[in-house]
Image 1: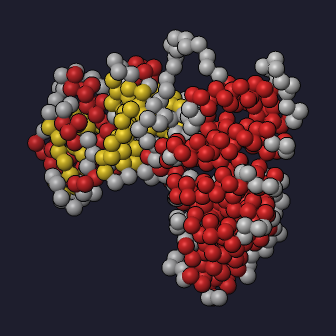
Image 2: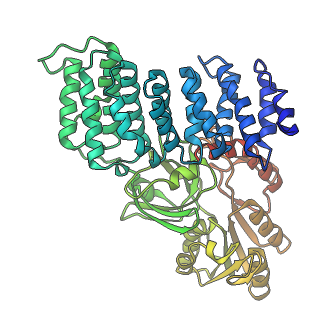
Amino acid sequence: MTERIEHIIKHIHFDNEVEVEKALNHAEELTHLTPEEKNDLALAFSIIFYHHDHSGITGMGKMAIRAEYFLASLGCEVVPYLINELINADSESAAYLGRAIALNTCNTVKKVLEAWNENWEDDFATINIIQTFSYYKSSQVLKAIPQIIVASKSSNFQVRSIGLYALGKLSLRLSPDDFSEQVKLSMFDAIFERLSDQKPLVRKNAARALGKMQKKKFLSDSQREKTLIAFKAILGTDNEHKWDRAFIVRHEASYFLPLFEIKPQLSHRYRQTFKILSKKELCDKTFHYVIEAPLISRKLQAGQFIIVRPHKLSERIPLSVCGWDKKKGTLEIIVNTVGKTSREINELKKGEAFVDIVGPLGKRSHVQYYPRTCVVIGGGYGTGAIIPTAKDLKNLGNKVIGIIGARNKDLLLMKNELSQVCDEVIITTNDGSQGVQGFVTDALDLLMLKEEVSFVLAVGPVPMMKAVSDLTRSKGIETFVSLNATMVDGTGMCGACRVSVAGKTKFACFHGPDFNGHDVDFNQLMKRQKMFAKEEKRALNGVAL
């Protein structure tokens, strides 16, 4: 054991969560770990899983969750050790080990299947392994589906139960398109058969799995109808059968029954599906979406934003809107993968839908007719956000010049779209691969030598907006920036997005997002944006499958 690893491990006290947190903090800062060091750390921190109360989210429980992500980040070298621990662990501790394995960026399914084949006579090991498969979020787990289906027919009712549980969880985590029709049919037949199992726990998980399959549109019309009849029999509402004597089974059937019933098609005046109508990759990890949202698009104005949630368990994040079509009932956004939720968004496919979108939020951009030139500046993903305001300025009769910047030409976004609403577009790249070499401020500085400028709007990274505001302040040019402060509810109630403008506290979601750039306390804003940097990094690592 190396000295730096020994220094961390010897200070771990499993009855003291503060010491465990310190050890995790030190371990997460280590770089260039050897395979031996990784295994030493895996051995040390996996013990946390056995040393805390599993009955609730305690302080040590939170440390165990952190340890999951840390062990997953150690890579392929620790997978054999984690699997060996998984085989012999109690069910509660196995949950943490299983998630650490499933979160690992290596293709761990093959190794877990090998462990299953070696321990198939051990029902407890089998249960832990099947539970682990239920944590995967990538299609690599499809290799295990046939074996999970076999397990759902085991002579051991606990194995049958966990097999059905895993099939239901994977139905939610993966897309129906990932499964072949034959596999979906085999899953349905195996699960439906268990609705008549002797054990209530098995029947409960069978009903739940079918409900989840219907929720994700796995079932055909005939399968839906067949399950509907079975659920009504379980609940005793078909006037032919007595209800299932087990409350846990009736509860599942009652909960999911509305998903199987076909209701009369009424006029849904307020219906919005938030379905993704098109998805286009603009550059690496950056995508343009067209989304069905007729009620929102009807009310949108330049400068306003939306708050989205891609999945039921996702956090809500604010996004700028780069366009909309009131007649078609659509809106457009650009999403760059920088955190956990933006990654979840960019994993969505055409035809899938956001679970909800709230908007329009915030105030309209400050636009009017100006006697001299108007300049709109976009940095990175901010380019999309300036297009609606540029369009409004142009429609008011203004001369509008756009400036967009990126590190290199491959990262430039929406050039053609911005050109359609501007008199001229100036391009800047840090490396000089296209347009002016330098930053957007360099182009603005040159432009102000040739043009009299009345108005500037800058949208993009905070340092860029600060630099633009500093440049225009001495010249007395009206300058607005769009602030992307951390938000929660988006209506001014929570106060999370507070910013200091002209010495007064404002809420970016309610009073903005556009503010006079000369009045914004950018230093405070940048400090607040870094408040959750560590947590955001952990969350992002946690979905890196």
